Length: 119
Image (cartoon, rainbow, N blue to C red):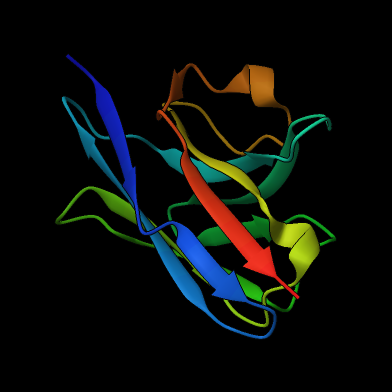
């Protein structure tokens, strides 16, 4: 059974850093990444990594960094210079295919982890 389990969310103040982790089990994936959804807003692409290639959403570019440890089958999202508008539920995603910015391209999703950033 394939599972994606996120951890690392929590409360932060503006300017702080947090690191999210997502451990995959059951299989390995070519592509893993993160989406987020703030209350009352549409789901938003955050970052994705496929082998060593990375892409970021415009709102997080330069502040967030995605990486993966293939030996641990885990992807990380380092979030620096956090802003209140980063407050959202962050979802880990995975697919055996290549990079996509579309949420419907990912057939495996984690349960989500909440990040709350206060001003």
